[in-house]
Length: 567
Image (cartoon, rainbow, N blue to C red; front, side, top):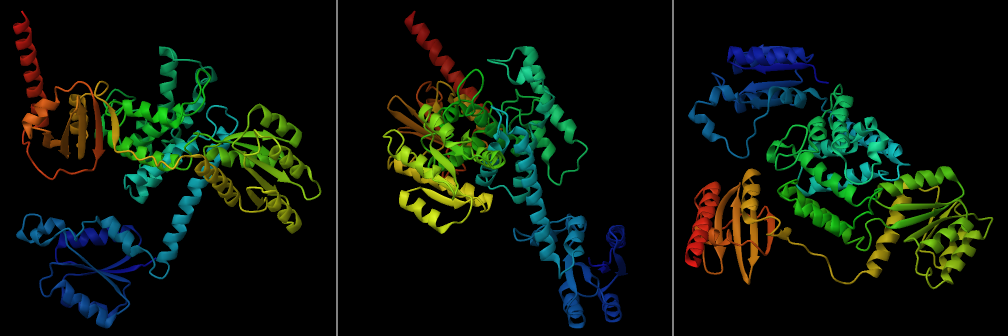
């Protein structure tokens, strides 16, 4: 780490502040009040880094930097502009979008690393962070492994949450924040009684309250840990609702951390598509439709749209089933357990058989989507089993993958001649085995599906379930930029929002506020919300809430006139 700093600042308070903070961080600091003094010092002493305040009395910072590099070409030089010195002056106007403000601690961190080892240090830190997250993922997976209902749910949620955060353009720190929070957010359920967790049907009030306590329990478990990311607010807020009716703090819209809004959607989806004691797992399409019905109420519609895009990409690979079933046939329980955990993490349903006789009974009762079987080079059992499957009309199309105990060329060639869909050594990296199994399932899904590609356009729904007033309040509350398209009785209209304000409205015949007042009467039909679409025109200048109130007044007036005419 670099130790020797030169601070060149004419302002006494700023100079002493920088020097003091550097010394507290363990650096040796020399001070200079002018460019001339700094030039004399730099000729006599070797420095690792020099910080120059841009407002020097005798020369420009650029001129001093050139003189320093002429004497000490290896020295790192940074020019700093104190915000305190320019905030009330015309000089602040010279700064544009290419200029950035960073705090002093970030400056020290930037110059505190060793130039020769900085890249490798950051790389090592990055690998260490990723390794830690993977270890937590494995440990949580082991805790859930034998749970019939929650097995691999944390990993599935984490993958979907990470993909959704990426779809939303989150930075690296936010991604890690979401990943870790998703893995840990339900750990507090360990304190919830098993009779509540396994209860059938809807919770009564007492059970619901005991279940709600898992949020604060999770927070209490981790409150002493100084996470490098804002993990705790995500864990605490993952049961908040977009409309403010959630718990534990009743936050709404943007008050809820973005990570918590992501976890809320993903957590609900994984629960809906998982089997429970009182119901079967919902299909991906049915679960998504249920989420969309709660857009703007329970869920952030913009985050939900990003999640839908993530889901559509996955459905392109697995359109037939949410959880394809893989039958593992292996007499080694340790390997079966390890493979089972990793495949569960990929969202697959796993059946196990310790022998081919057991496997045949399992297959006849319920054919899987893929058989993964151990092949012993000393035995032909695996090939006999494959032959029996291929001779049965109901089973001949089931994909078959062999896991070889040894890399025996004769066995491998025989397997390929017999038409196995995949052949991989058990000594291979477990990640490679998983990817090969995934590829078999993907190929099979593509073979079965139609050529039609699933293409969605935004969040769709019925105006009966979410009327235009609700949509306007939702987008205004969340300060969203979006395009809303409505269809009603052969007519269609469009509204554009920018940062929560209605900017443009049009129907087939109307534009501006008149179009808005026409559409607010539409109480049936469909809506589509596309986030991130900016308006090209501005035909509406009134406040969104004023538009709603005026629209309601016009509806009431027309209703009163209709009633009067009828009487």
